[in-house]
Image (cartoon, rainbow, N blue to C red):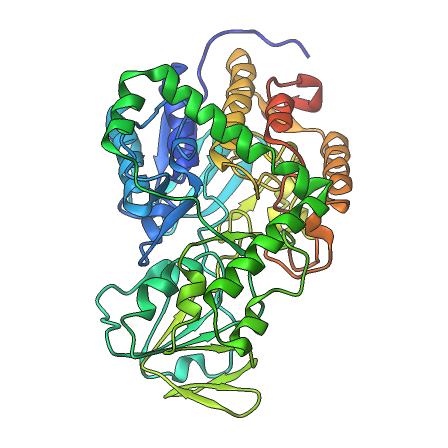
Length: 493
C-alpha cells in the first residue's frame, strides 16, 4: 500500500513519571516531538523512588550508573544513591528539561482502548475523563503494585499495619513490639534501621536471602569536584562501573558455578556477625545463589544478631486482633505489623485494562504469560510501546541502561509513524513468538531456572521478567527498527 510521506507528528501519551517516563519524555523533546503528555497518578514525579520512603531506602546499583547517560550528576553523596537523592535527581531533570507543563498529575489511567477505525487510543481516567492519542507509551514500571500476602485475619488486627511501599511515617516505632513479614530487598534495608528503635522485632521469614557486603561509602569532596571539573573522569568512572557489573552477567546466564564464590562470601559474612547458632542455621539459604535476587547490605547480619530480634521461620497460620499466630501454635503479640512482601512485578500494566485490535484485551493475550517483542511491543496492540516490559529486568546491572536502549527503539518506531500520518505499527505475531521462544530458551540454562520459587516467575512458573543475556546484546538488538517486523495499518485496516 502506498502512503504519502510527510513530517506530521503523532500525538503521544506517556503513562508514568519514573525514570522510564521522564527519560522518554526528555528524548522526545530533544527529537522535536511537541505533542507529548505525561500522565501521573500521584501528585509528584518519581515512581518507585517517590513511593518507597521507608527508613534506609537506597539503590543497589552505583549512583553514577543509576542515572541517565545524557544527564550526569557529579555530587552524589555516596557510591550508592539514597532514596531522597534519586528522587531529587528526577525532579532536577523535570525542571532542567522543562517537562512540568507536559505533566498532568493526579491522573490515573483505568482503561486504554484501541479504535481500529481511527488508529487512535482512547484512555479513560479513574475520574471518568477520556483522552485520545495516536501513540501510548507505558512507563509504569514493575515495582508499582505492592504485593500483600493472603493471611487469614489480616483485617482483624487492631494495631498499626502498613506495607513498606506505603510507609507510615506518623507511627513512632520507638519501644514498640514490631512484626515484619518478609525478608526481601526492602526489608533488608529497613529492618536494620528500625531494629534498634523497637522494643522487640519478630521477623517472619519464608525463605532466607543471599546477602553480600555492600561496597558503599561516602564520596569525598575532592572526588565530587573531580567528577565535575574533569568530565572525562566522570565518564571513565561510569564506564568502569558498567563493565564491572556486566561481567557478572556470565554467572547468571551460563556459568552459574561462578556464583559459588559469592555464596562462600555470604556465608563468611553471616558467620562473622550472627552468633546465635539457631539464627545462623536459618539465615543461610538452601537454594542456588542467584536463583532469587541477591541482596547487598552491611548491616543486615548485625541486625539479625540483635537480642531483641526474633527470627521466625515457623509459617504464619493467621493474624488476630493482637498479633500473629504461627502454625505451631505460638502467638506473637505485637503493636505493629509491617509487610515487606515486595511487589506484583509480573502483572505488567496492572491495574490498567488494555484492549487492542478486535476488542481483545491484554489479559487475554497474556493468559499464558506476558510476552513482548524486544520487551516493548505486543502483537494486536498497535502503537503501544512499553518501557521496562516483559523480560527486560536485570539482576546484574542498571535498568537505566536498558531503558535508554528502549528510548532509542521507540524513537525509531516514531520516525516510521512520522512518515505515514494516521498509520499504526503492529508487530507481527510470528516475529513476536519467535523472539519469545529465543528468550525462553536462553532462560532455560540460567540460574533463575535452578528450581527456587522467586518473584521472577509468574503464576504459571514462567520467567516473564528477566533478560537472559548481557545488556550490550540488548542494546545491539534495539539499535534500529526493522520495519519487516511490523504491519503498517491504515485507519480501519
